[in-house]
Image (cartoon, rainbow, N blue to C red; front, side, top):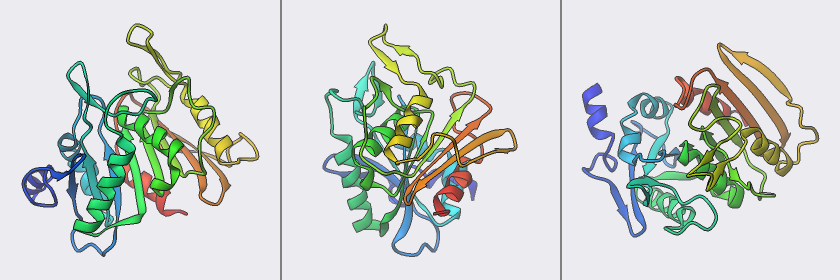
Length: 260
């Protein structure tokens, strides 16, 4: 069974190869005996990754599917130093990835019956940055956003549209995307401070105070939550470790998403 799951993971709902639309490609894996329309998690790969690579993370994919969610893993097209990434930073040339993701969702709804309401856009690293920028510009595109190891770059947006539901996960020891940010490309670009980005989201969500409504520890993971208004909640999950997707992320994220 494990071999079968791995083999099907890079397919188009069981058909060989990626799903193709006019603006690009995506992979999709459907849960067994799913109700239509089925909830969906769209997961954006990191710099140098691919949708097929995302689907090889069968631990995450199967955890999401076991709870009735379809999993979509699109392919980025922007190339830098031969590596694939997302067009998230203002002024970059390339495909309009926000439009592409809307087209992915419309195609998956038509072909496979995924919901266009019960939707989470998640992503790792460069994919996490893309999640933040799309949530900032077009928060209505997805019901919730779940970046891992990605926030904003400097200068970060002065404001965003909103409100949003946001579940941010980050490794305490992340050196690739440090919590405080860092310079890239000979100081051509600067990753932003994750805490500054969360401050922006609290302002966008109309939080009356910056102090969290709840602070707790889940094993070794430190968690904070802000319940600001209806459809405007933020959760921060700081886990021990570095630049990685933490173990158990899928269930923790869905527990948060399903608690509305």
